[in-house]
Each structure stands twice: as structure tokens, then as C-alpha cells.
Image 1 (cartoon, rainbow, N blue to C red):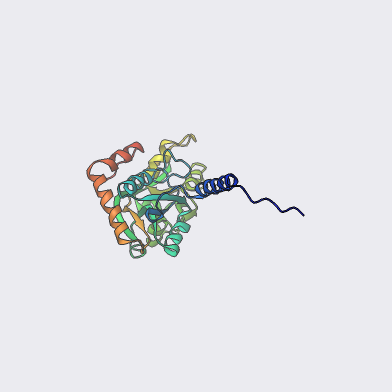
Image 2 (image 1 turned 90 degrees about the vertical axis):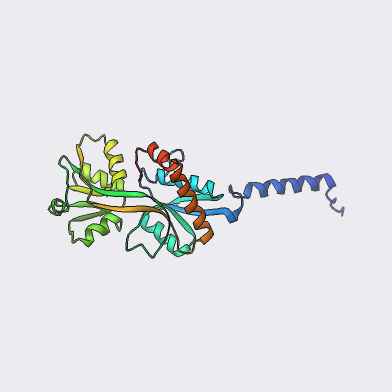
Length: 254
């Protein structure tokens, strides 16, 4: 029986070249894996916007520029807020672009760099809700489940809360008359009111609560990486980069 021919040198070179190309294709899009940071975000337009690479939200843009200045690379994945925060705590070394700092969260995360103050306001149909006393008399108020608005009103004894999965759901329920009001942060309230095309008149009341938003991370993030982001954001604040990014989204950050 004739023996198979051994591959020629030319065939061997072609096979090696093909394997090399496959290896290149299989490599991740990032460069040095030691400079890659995993980022978890939640869809809260205009702060963080899922599925829009051109306009990913002002917090994500701030983090993108900070990463570049810190010689880091980021990979952003969106999750519902509760799941995203749980992933940060269970898997570690994860960054969140804009998290509101509350007493309940204080020791659960590292607070890398301040983004700005967020005021919370009631959005309602026709008549603005200006105070907590007014809100307490309403039949129902939409709040994202386990979010800051939920925690704030629950801690003050509100028993008229309708917990929803997202800002979009709260907006739809309000415009369809399923709830009387919705408590949310000012950037989100302004965004939905400005884009409202339902024919329903929406009113935004005076702030009833305020918190500070930070770029946050899992507690085990490297101190060197944390400091690099912190320094980058402070430089961005000083040179006006943060203000310019926020302005693109119609937001003012203090």
C-alpha cells in the first residue's frame, strides 16, 4: 500500500499561516488584559443608555474618557440594576458608571469619583406634586423596585408605592393613568418629559430629595486602578470635560 506523502515545506507554511490568522481572529478586541476593566451599567437614560454606542449616556462617556486618560480599557455590559449590583458584589473588580451614594450602600462599594448631585422630583399628570405630604395622599406612586426612590419613600412610611422594573415602565404607567405620580431623579424626569409625545400633560415638582452620584466599584478593586480613575475624573472636572459631556445630554453637573 502506498504511503501518504509528507506535507511539503510550502504546505506546512500555509497551515501555520492559517493557524496564526485564526489565533489573531480569536483574540479579544482589547489590548493588554491587565489594563481591561469590566463595567456593569443599568439603562437609565440619559445617565446610561443601553444599545446606543454613539450616545451611551453621560456617565458612560465620562467613564470612557477617564479610562483613556488612566491608560485603561473598559468593557460595558448592561443589566437590570439589582442584578448588576449583585454581580458587582459577587464577582468583584467591577466598575459602575454612576451609582447614587446612600447609607445602605456606603460599605458595599468603593466610591471612586464624584459625578454630581441628583435631585429627586415627582412627575405627575397636570398638577405638580411639590411635597411629600401631597405625595402621601396619592393613590399610587411608581418607583423602580429596590431603587433609591423606593428606599427613600419606604423609609418614610409610604404605603402607596407601585414598584416597577424600569423608568420606561413607570413613564408608560403614568401616561396611561395607571399611577398618579412617579418619583425619579431630575435628569431622567426631564428626559422623559421633553420626549413625551403621548398628548398627556406632565408636570415636574420641586426636589424632595437629593443624593450624590459616583463612579463606584466592587470593594476589591485595585487601589492603584481606583486612584487612576479618581485622578482622571478630577482632571476632567477641572478642564471642563465633564461639563461639556453633560451639556451634550442637556444636563448640568455641579
